[in-house]
Length: 103
Figure 1 (cartoon, rainbow, N blue to C red):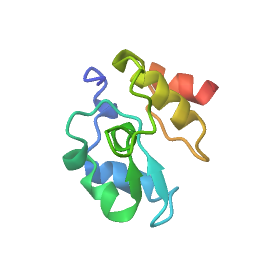
Figure 2: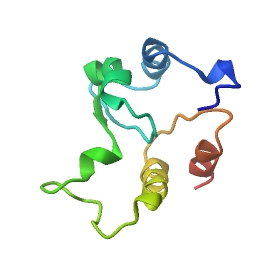
Figure 3: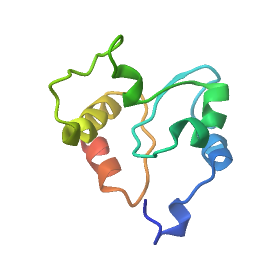
Figure 4: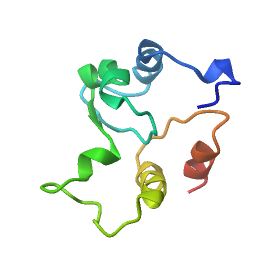
């Protein structure tokens, strides 16, 4: 997202370099994202933290997210989960990050 703002385009290693300033090794980190290739893009973070995405709580055997929730509402579920964390790191130009900070 935000391709018009090149300052928001960070590589996985750049994200890790910023994250290690605020997270301890092995911390639980929930990532609210619409990134399609989560496993590949966030691989560096997964080497250092216990990383979770909304997808990890969906599925037949471990579904904590109800099957009756409209997929168009998944972003709102992500927003609520992220807003309840001990620490939040967002994107400066993101409306989504702004909503999370306000909650």
